[in-house]
Length: 139
Image 1 (spheres, rainbow, N blue to C red):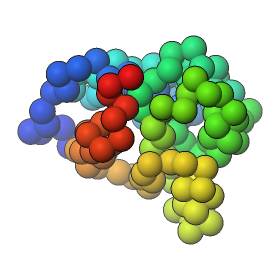
Image 2: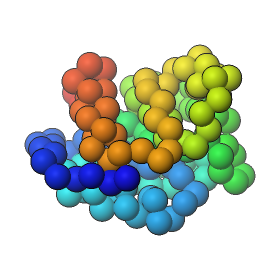
Image 3: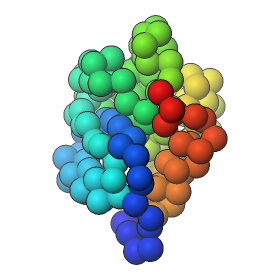
């Protein structure tokens, strides 16, 4: 699940917000992404994630769908009402793989949709692709 071999380290301090209610997954993602040179902020539910996004203005948000208090899609909809977060690129990172979930997320503006379980090397490539193609690193 977490292939780290051969990944290049990020030379900038791109800020990534991880919003997921699985502490072990969050910690693993945080460790691996920090090893690649990213600055990481975390949240355990959608409401906390929304607060962190508004405060921290991350470049990228890795967002789960199924969470307590406020799910990821609700957070995504609420995030769209905050103009200071318009530059945040969102990658859904979830076990939800049904077409209607993907369509709803894409309608809300996500740049990519990754289904768990996933390969960490592929996730890092997707993050790098977002940084290259969506100009979020130049905030």
